[in-house]
Image: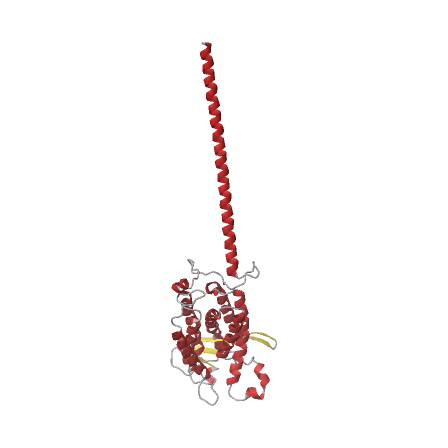
Length: 368
């Protein structure tokens, strides 16, 4: 089923089809493709940040895979738990049927953080540094993924007279007139948040975990106001409160409190404020790149950490340099010895010639 989507005040009209490809009864939806693209971009960004954040790339990949699984399970359980009515109680098998939709972003974030964080801990990574990278990845994924809601014509808001109000056959079923394009609000704010926090992480971060707390504040405030505009919010059982609004407000407040508590913390393991990096003994090069993860295992020297392997290489280089210098000293000594010997031979030759000349002179005198 296609949707005719219009932005009347802007003169924009497009036709969108939720189905990207179809093979018989098998359908591939744009929603899944867009979510996949957002996830892939987030992963690529995470890998690109490993060197600056001093994170082992292979260990991060393990945490990402675990976080992906935890995120899918968490998103589905979140939706099922707060779904109004007894649909899933009457038929529990429908819990596993996600073709009709039914995922909650907050459940996905919670599930991904729990599973991914546990794996990061198990792999002996700096969990707080991993959370900083993950939060930036979340913003990329959320910013891109919300366009899947546009294709499905869902997650829209109440009626509005604003110039960018949206109208479609799907919105007309619930709201009269143009509606708030909530997907667009959240997408733009998430991408803006990514840009801001990316530069903050690179240049201003004071301690591991600070970016993650700022992400919780940013997204919490964003989601709190956007959720208030939506028409399809999940509600707390027995209370006329939107679940996502309550979680957004609670998480943002908790993060603000933690930011205040840790305001004097200056513990970094990767990029951030130059002064704090130097305070923590991090190697700051001209392009503000750090050494590789000191806790990562070397792939050349088995059983050693990367830091130990680095020290071993440096020691070998020092010994090689010392050996070279000693060899040069020996060569210089040999040259000096040869030079002295040559000088002695020259002196002897000159003395012999002088003596011979003197004797010839005496013989001539005697003959005279």
